[in-house]
Amino acid sequence: MNKALDILIVDDRPENLLTLEHLLESPDLNIVRATSGQEALGLLLDHDFALVLLDVQMPDMDGFETAELMRGNKRTRHIPIIFVTANHTESKHIFRGYDSGAVDYLFKPLDAQMLLCKVRIFLEIHRQRQALQAKTRELDARIVELHQLQSELEEKNRQLQLLSSLDGLTGIPNRRQFDEMLGIEWNRMARERLPLSLVILDVDHFKLYNDRYGHLAGDSCLRRVATALAGLLRRPADMVARYGGEEFAAILPGTGLEGAKVVAESMRQAVASLGIEHQDSPVQSVVTVSLGLSAVVPLPGCAPADLLQAADQGLYQAKQEGRDRWISFDCVPAACTPVLT
Image (cartoon, rainbow, N blue to C red):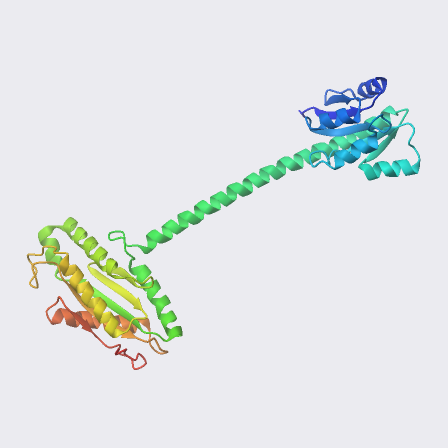
């Protein structure tokens, strides 16, 4: 059932108001009366009127002035006004009424059928406007809700992406993130014609460590090693990742071979300085690492896999020579010119 709509009828003569009220009487309407323009303007601030029937000829403030003031107010400018008049029937007065904001005219004596027909039209327009406003508010609310859901989804995706790029045990980047960043930095260094260094390291005799101390201790050991390695890298573009098992790798953009050697030695010392007991190690009584490294200015014909292979070859040689050391190895393809300084 539709809510009763408010209609304002304005006339300085009570008998005219009574006639209008009688003609408009309906359970669907709530008729409010005003006997002057000033009273009408006051009532307009307290009600949401669907329509105003406004007498033109009134003392102090006539209908034209009242309509103009209504149109000048943001709250009331949209309310349709039908002028009711007996005297102002000439074209100039009618045009003035429209200029003041009227949407229609009714002439006295009132034709009941004409009155009701016009009132019904404007009330239906008002209901349609209300329905449109309700739909607009509903749509706005849905848009806000969708924006919120989109923000939540983007945040969830960001969290998932972050989780998918981090190693679950150590909290540093995983192999997937390492491979992605190696490709990105390779292309960047190729554009800028700068060297790219790679360090691969392995915890020495980690299987023996796990066999003696257990896998929980082994996990703790890897976490401590990862934290120590990550703490050495200060530049935003540098990255250390868990490469797999007890193996780690570091990407050092813009770093030549000599700089990579300094980083590798710092890593070796940092892990040994942790003082993690390793009684079964034939190298030392604490956990140590072996490292391989290589550096190259990326050129056409050379690929990231070549740099990885060179660093891995250095790691293999470091293990062969007794572990707890680093060995640099040149990138093999001729297109990969080693960075010597």
